[in-house]
Amino acid sequence: MLPVIAPSLIGVGLFGVTLSYDEFARSLLTAGTYNTLPLEIYGMTTSVTTPVLYALGTLTTLFSFFIIAVFMGLFLWTRRKLKTPAPVDHLEQV
Image 1 (cartoon, rainbow, N blue to C red):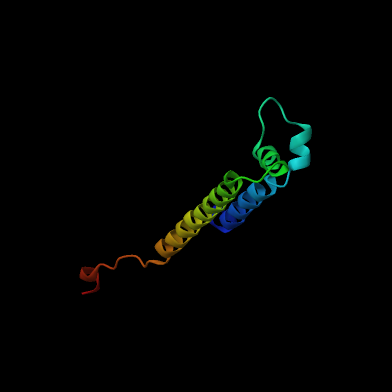
Image 2: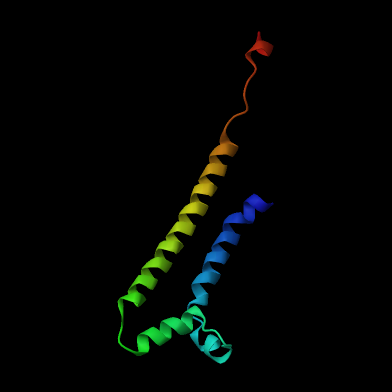
């Protein structure tokens, strides 16, 4: 059953990470002593935009693409491994 729902679980996980960046209002109300990433990004955009903001956007985008590539590679590897036919013993056929 897990191979059937595994792509959905991966998609839900990636969607959850994507939505967490859009939770600025909720993060602002529940912020403790440390800032979360959405609050840090908002703090960077209220003043003069520095190259750090662009670097952070680039790193998070590259990290997302890396995670997607790892799971796609894992998916294709397991799919290819499951389609490999079982070895045939030629001695039994003779």
